[in-house]
Amino acid sequence: MLARVPAGWSVAAYDGRRYGVTRSSAAGGRSIGVYAEELGGTDVVSTNVYLTSSGPQLRPCEMPAEKVLAFLAGLEVVDPPSTPA
Figure 1 (tube, rainbow, N blue to C red):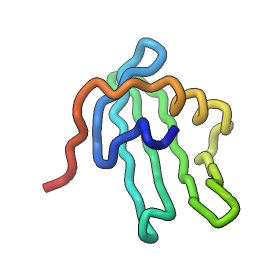
Figure 2 (tube, one colour; figure 1 turned 90 degrees about the vertical axis):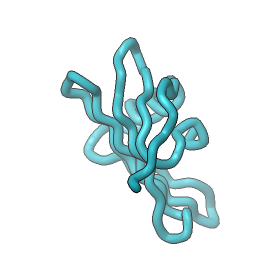
Figure 3 (cartoon, rainbow, N blue to C red; figure 1 turned 30 degrees about the horizontal axis):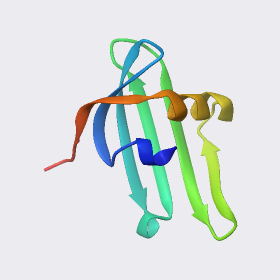
């Protein structure tokens, strides 16, 4: 599901709403962060995913894993990603 989120900042649609989505990575790509904020609204989706030898470990940030998984499965990127200059 993470492959659906491009690196950098992009605009995505989910559940009839638009979100600004940032995907970042650290530790040589073994740690991936996704932060999405509803544009013009109050909803937030945030998680870290750690790619370990035993498989990916999802660590949502103060929200149910189900919310994060539904968002990642249902989002559609509508504007191409941009990265900081």
